[in-house]
Figure 1 (cartoon, rainbow, N blue to C red):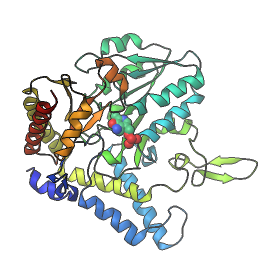
Figure 2 (cartoon, protein in one colour):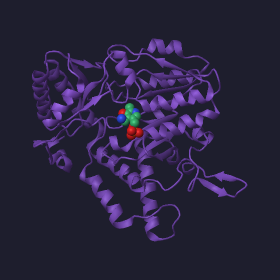
Figure 3 (tube, protein in one colour):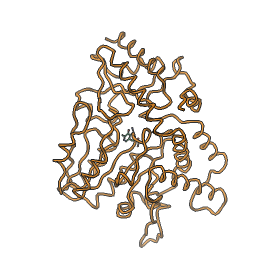
Figure 4 (tube, protein in one colour):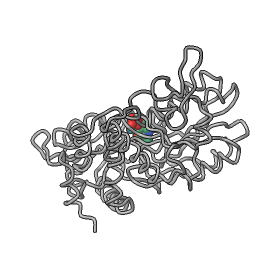
Length: 404
Ligand code: PMP
C-alpha cells in the first residue's frame, strides 16, 4: 500500500520552509530530492571507506572498489543490460551523449544523415550538431504536432539508407510526452541506423529494459532518480562500445603506456578516465534500491493520479494553456497564462514557497514551435501530494489576479 505521508518522512528537505511557507517542491524534472537512505550511503562512504578505487591493495580501496562495482551490477540488473561492462559510469546524460557523439566522428562521413526529434533537450541536439560540423553530415528533424507528439509518418519518410544515427528522448523534459521509442528503434534498425535514447526523464518514472528495447545507447542521470548530481550512466551495446574510440585519455583507461604507444583498457574502463565519482556511483545504486523498494509501477500509478488531478484543476483557471497534451505523458505540466511572462508567475510562486521551473527548459526549439518565450513547468514526483497541487493551483490563481 503506497503511503505518501510515510514516503515524505524519508526526505528531510521536504520539512523545510521557503520564504516562511512550507516548501512545495515541483521542480522534479530538473532534479529530484534525496531520501535519507541515499544520504546515509553518502555519509557512510566519506565517514568509513573513502579511498581511490581499482589501484589500491589496501582495505579501504578494496572496499570502495567492491561497492562501486556492486553498484554497477545493480544498475546493469535494473536496466537489464546483458553485461555489466556495457554500463559506463559518466557524470550524467550530457557527458554520456558527448561520448557517443564524439566517438561517431570516426564512423560518419559527408552526406550521411542523422535524425533528431523536434522535442530534444539541448544536450541531445548540440553534440550532434557539433558532429555534423566535424563530418559534413546532415541533421534532419522528426517534427511534432501541437499536442507534443512526434509525427511518426514523417519519421518513416525521413528514414533511408543515408540515415546513420537516430536520437530521441524517451520522455520530453519540457512536455512530459512519452515517445514511442520501440517503434523508433525498430524502424531505424531496419535501415541500418544506430539509435541513442536519452532516458534522463524516463528513469524516474519507468524501467527501461535495454535488451527488450534492443537500443544501441541509452543515457541516465542519477540526480533525476533520487541520487546525487554529477553521476550517471551510458549504456551501450558491447559491440558499439568496443568499436567507439575513448572520449578522454588519462589514468584508469589504459592497458599499457609507453612514450611510443598506449593501448587502452577493455570495457568499461576505456571510457572511464581519471578518478570517477566513486561515492556518486555507489549512491546511484542506493537510489535505485530505494525506488525499487517502492516499485516503479506503484510510482507511475500514483504520479498519474497527480497528473490527472493537477491537469483538471489547472485547466479551470481562465487564460491558462497547457503545452503538451500527448495521450502518453508523465507528470509534467508546462503552461502559460495569457498575457503573462512565465518568469513573473514563477517569481510569485517562489514567494509562496512553491518551486517550479520557468523558461525554455533547455529545449528552445519546442518554445520556437509554440512561438512562446518559455513556460511555467510543474513536475511531480511520487513524494508530492494532492494538497500540494491545491497549493500550486491557489498560487497560480493569486499570481494571475496580480498580473493580469
Ligand atoms: N535530457 C533530458 C531530457 C533532460 O531532462 C536533462 C536534464 N534536464 C538532460 C538531458 C541533461 O541531463 P544532465 O544535465 O544531468 O546531464
